[in-house]
Image 1: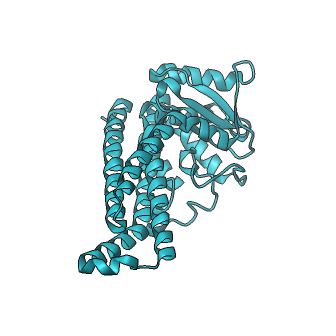
Image 2: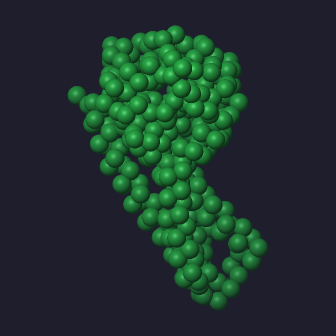
Image 3: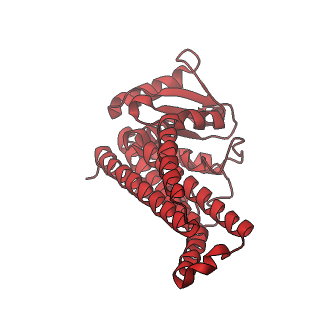
Length: 301
């Protein structure tokens, strides 16, 4: 039977695969642009930019996310029940106790961030503390600790960096095409140049969409894995089921919700997501539909 350690090892492998795919994609995009513009410097810039973005994403992602969410650190004296739940479940999971933060927001939600278990953070909203009972809170915290144990946070960071760079490169290419006139000097490069120009335009339009779909698919899968791992950790799936029901039914919207960080939260911070879930709609969701998550959890009982 799959365990939290199985998921962790699988996600570590995914991280290396994503890093490799990231650098291959950057080199490929840089080569294409340098060919079209006849400038080798573009390829050099693309590689250097990817390295810098990767380093920033790895070392500073937690600080950036916490700042965007408006999270503040709390001590055991300020939130004893929350702190003890985090500490006890971390010990059970064999993880270092992460730092604990609170987001002053009435919408019940939570997220985990950090580059590895030794530098992890669990953040919960004030609404989560006031609206969930202890069993439900344990289910949510176990879910977030599972993200830490499964090494989901680094996978998510790499995905975000990849999507951001691809989107930035595509936008820059299309804008440059507009200002210099599509075709430009490439008319003099013959049929091969025209084909490469067409390929560049098509990739500039489709690449951000494909990268975003990949990021969202990764996000949805890791939520299901964290649900399963969290239920194994507490040995009480019904606590997590009850938390999902309460959070999804709560009318309050997260004030600090942003598209760039939506996938990090325990449940989608956008209330309209998940109400209509045909196949195409699911492709653009950051989280699996709540009913699917609940069904999977109840199958574990």
